[in-house]
Length: 161
Image 1 (cartoon, one colour):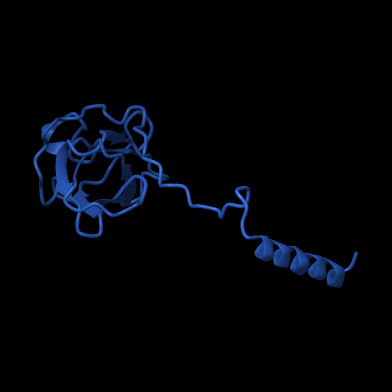
Image 2 (spheres, one colour; image 1 turned 90 degrees about the vertical axis):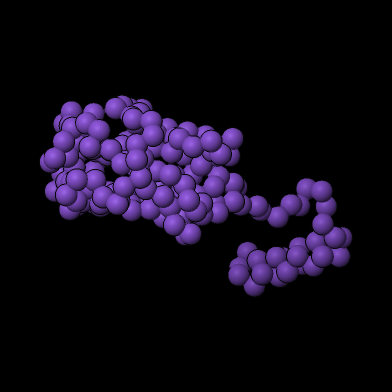
C-alpha cells in the first residue's frame, strides 16, 4: 500500500459516510467539562472563618495570585471571596494578623500582597480557601518550588452547591 492508495481509500470512506448520513455510532468528539478543584490535605490548617477583606497583609513584599472559575464551563467568577494565610517573615499562620481575604475581579483573578512566605514543617507554602455559600468549600495548600520565590499562584475551579 502506498500513499496514493491510502488517500483514495480514505476519500472513498468519507464519501460513503456522507452518502449514508451519520449513524448512531458516529458521534463527534465533545470537550469534557472543567472538573472542580479538590481540597488539599492540610489546606484548612489554622483556618479562621470570616477573616477580613484587606488591601494587604502586613508589610507586603510577596504576591499571592490566582484565578477562580466555575466547574463545567470554566466561566470566570467575579466577587468571589478568597482567604489567604501563611507562615511569613512577620508571623505564624495561626496568628490573626497573618490572615486576610480578597475578592476576585471581573476576569476571575485575585492578588493579595503579604509578607514573604517562609518554610513551615520544612516546606514554604501558603493556604487559600473559598468558603462561601454558592459553591462547595475548597482549601488549598500549594507548596513553593523555592523559599526564595516572591510569588505563589493558586487557581480554583468551584463546583456550584
